[in-house]
Image (cartoon, rainbow, N blue to C red; front, top):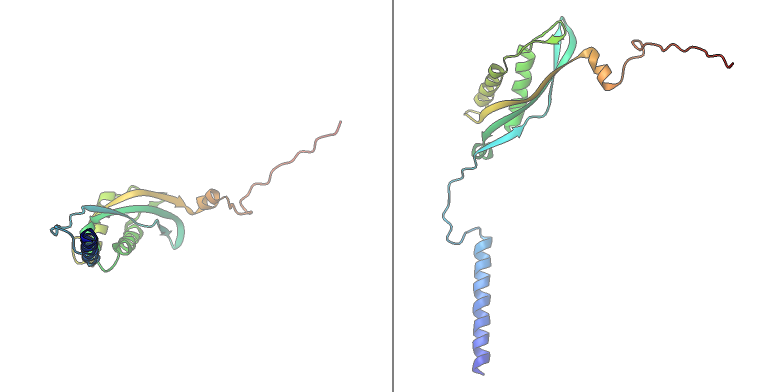
Length: 171
């Protein structure tokens, strides 16, 4: 009889302790855990591919295609209410469109370091603080308007060369 009472008290104690532990855990409190400062480091974010038309003498002559990545402090990114990718994309497009140089249908040399620094400064000014640490070039290319058809395999019929077919005799 005493054994049965002791087992009953033990089951009640275990049930109460596990219920208390589950409620405490569900409330978000940690067991003996002091709050530590959040130090996640840098986070890399990819910017969608940017296609910038190059307009020369009122006509589109080709496109600059840029792939960019930027780094920012992960803690700062979590605090922002807006995604900085939008601002990086917009300012990169504007910088390439305004300061991109295409001469005689060929892309001329860019000073990428200065270009990326200007984009970073503009983005940080819009976000009211040093959010973006660095902007990196993943890839940049120029495609002439005439080369697009060739690359896509959609060469227009007016430019296609007709093939010469010679008749062979059956003898």
